[in-house]
Image 1 (cartoon, rainbow, N blue to C red):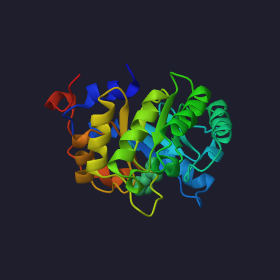
Image 2 (cartoon, protein in one colour; image 1 turned 30 degrees about the vertical axis):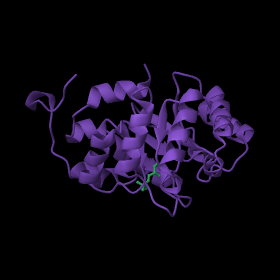
Image 3 (cartoon, rainbow, N blue to C red; image 1 turned 90 degrees about the horizontal axis):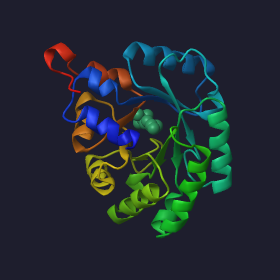
Length: 241
Ligand SMILES: O=C[C@H](O)COP(=O)(O)O
């Protein structure tokens, strides 16, 4: 069972603050981010009770992350890097303490129908990020047709990824949509997780993404999203095992 499947099983039908927080990668990937910004992100992540933080690889290794999962990105944001370069970047990130790596595929390769090349690209990074470390594959769905999204999901699964992920959050065509998340969820059929990211700013958007099939959320604005959700707890029936 993949971690994504475990996420889905643990969160199906959930929508309270704690349940959504448990799906969140609290994210800071802006090029202008400073060490102080990352320290503030980590402190905020701990106070919010999110699952993970996701930062650029140059900030690793990180101190003071406690129980937070440490995630980073690879081949970001264009995906236009040689597979060997992505693999080396991922290997360095793992050596620096990354537990999860979100890689960007060559989006143009998907648009050209080069699914085998995308699979090989993902496989190269997978080799550098062995299980139980987690590999997420960013497809940049706003730049793709449905058929290309499906091909990207197939390539990611064939290469052994744990998640498919909608977006970098940096593409001018946009970020996550319910349509893309639902399509990805149908395609991977619970065998991989689905991470929705890019442009999710409100509680309503976040819950809609989960309802569409997202098992992880990438958010730079986690506080605003979580503050818009009902508290919910085990005693009130807000959490089911
Ligand atoms: O992977 C996560 C994204 O970069 C977050 O995008 P966002 O800043 O639109 O929330």
